[in-house]
Image 1: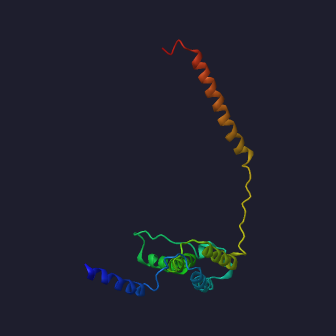
Image 2: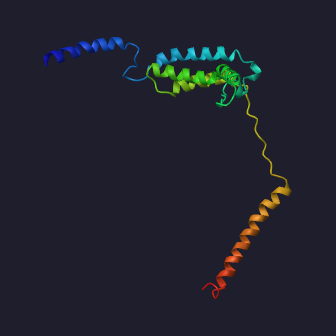
Image 3: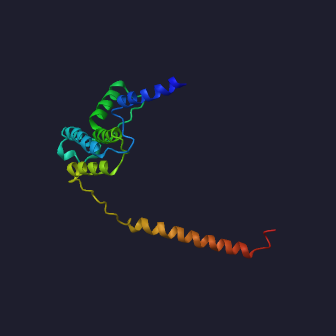
Length: 172
């Protein structure tokens, strides 16, 4: 039994040596995270450099995916996969930030990663404005029947219930 006890202390330094890149047990290495996240930002900036600046606000340029049913011709499937490789920039960026956070022992998302991602959004998407949809009432030809029909049906059903409740002789 003493030999087993002697081997365990010898294994501990070996495990610690092999696990040099493991996350610290103490928690998140914030300094390491702040050093690694810019690598993701640089890769994203390089990918976004391939997209025309005027297309940066068009989310389908770098976020969308395509679904390839089995019945489509092979050439179409290849084109779709090529499209995906070139247009999943934001997904690659998000995956990169998550991976880097995990490497340094941080959970994801966390305030540091969120702040970095917000900075990237400011850098690339600050000129993207949301076009607010101006909602209008439907025309009167549509609106009036949509209001009157339920009101008339409600009154008619209430009247029918009252009328049937007064006629107790035919119920039995």
